[in-house]
Length: 587
Image 1 (cartoon, rainbow, N blue to C red):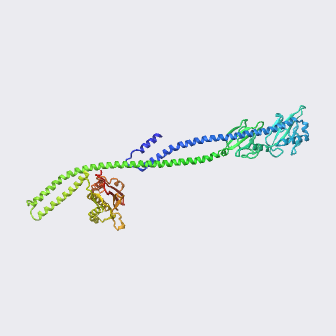
Image 2 (image 1 turned 90 degrees about the vertical axis):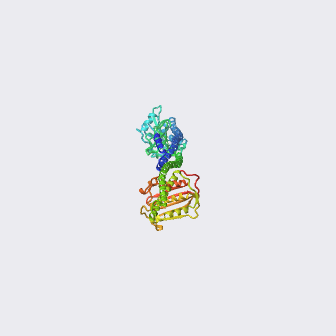
Image 3 (image 1 turned 180 degrees about the vertical axis):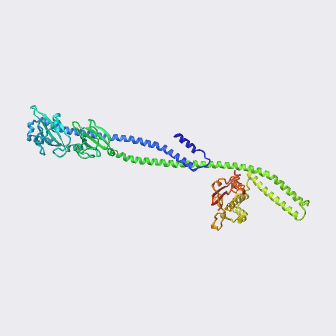
């Protein structure tokens, strides 16, 4: 994976031949993702580890109070039930069968018992045949036959018995404590006492459980022995799968069938089949942590969003600087390549000019000699013939002078001649140049228009080279406008036009704009517009016009730009400084 990232970076950071925006968008996305990953990954790992550690610590902190509550409730219930069982056992061994068979004695004992201890409902004496022969209490249970009842057999075997909560003859939840005694005379009997389970509920409430913790008793079959806030009233079935009863208090985390997680502390009550449960829903236990976790999650998301935003802005700035640097580098390489082409063309132009000048000098010399001979009367005859020869020789000399001018300009370009600088008004130069082209434009049906600001400042430049610049540009515009029948400027009522504007630019330069409504140029032509010998005029052009224009503008310290859209015309902008820099400008 690291190798892939390395290769991707190497590919994206290569110096491009042409600047592609998509390449830099890919680079920005990759760098942003890497920076976000490097910044956010440790933060997420730290948050995850902190969450796990804090959750475990919170579980231990919740486990401690519920464990202590279960232990206190166990001690209180064992004390309560043990105290009642011991009291009943004491009565059974302090009195004989004959004493307890007397209802007045049994009633006195029961009243004394209730005055000292709460929770006793009634008391009865059961003989060896299982008949309750004596009874004290609010119910008519004297004479009830308990023979064959499981509790009676268990009491006879174990001597003591404590029942689960049940309804029985009384019709409300209660439990029974029974003690079996065999006297020395061989008489056996059982003392049976009913205890109100409401007292068990009061004992559990007196321990002081937390508001969100439920404490209750279960028997072996999972039937509630006391009321539960979570699972209903006594004698209802508890849906919770209770853990096995043990003497030690055990805290576990279990899950209900509904999916709710609970923290449960369980322990068995000594001498009974009861299991004490202290249940606390994990959602309640973790409610403070949930609120804190939400706040921390918001802070974490805000931090991640801030990291993403800062990474995006930072990478955008860095990649934009890299793109600008690459653009400058590509421009410099293109300029160097262009300069190399110009240098080669300069050397070629110098050679051509020297080679052409020699035959031109011979032609000029021979023409001059011929004129001298005619003037001396040695050749040419008289009258009209002599006059005709002189006219032809003058045409030859004029043509030679014109050719010399062309070669002189080629030599000037090749040698990068210093411009003949002088103070001038550029609007005069533009008007003078356009006057040379008025007749040609009129013959082609093109309107030449000038928009010159008043009070344009003077500039220091070369008048002749400025004229050449404007002649080349306006001449190309005339060719473009007459090249195809495109809709013209309807505002001026002309079908075709070439407009020249001149306005100040930045306070230290003038901008001359030549725009037309010709056929325009596609992007591939624009890319080669300043290259030598590149022409779209086929056999009619040499491809040197814009090439030479570019060189002259650069020598004068200016800039030239071309904007064009195929089918909508072209605009050439020439920016000339008011005062060009010292020395010639390399082109």
